[in-house]
Length: 113
Length: 113
Image 1 (cartoon, each protein chain N blue to C red):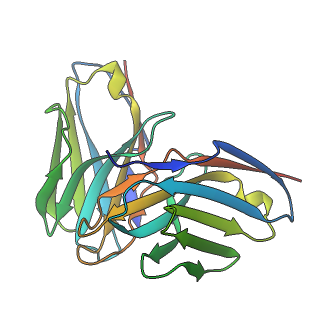
Image 2 (image 1 turned 180 degrees about the vertical axis):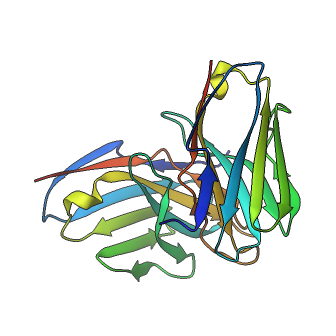
């Protein structure tokens, strides 16, 4: 069982909806990440929070809005998405300092209709 | 720009044989490398990592080899089992950029019984 839990596992939403993805980590890490995984493409880094401060926004459209209220929780708020935003959204956590591996959740499979 | 690539999109091996999955990276400033395994419906799972001051590291049934001269990384799986069937990703971390991993496209390992 992963130490990083993502909910929901599946989400179908229309282009005018507003929804949020939730991530919680139980590993005592202090950095959290959102990645996007699309078919036939490498994982794409979206956002990085280190010590609860956003340190990376990898040119992500404003229709994606992250929130990190504490070091254990991370949200991704979605609004007015496009069909091309359909993908697997993965949350990960790690230690903020030094080389340490990221630990991933099982993702939210998002379908935008 | 930087990229991490895998030589083969699919690798098919017989159960019990050894598997070798290759990865080429392009950035000589990368100092940390990770191999992940992703099974269907799950997030990437950490397998093994290696720092640039090493050229070999062994785990349980897995070995990672790093050749900095030709910027090549490989994952060797001994006595491959059906449960090893998955997509394998290599990832590199640029010096000083903790957590901002660059992922390759992935190699699908198929284990034939």
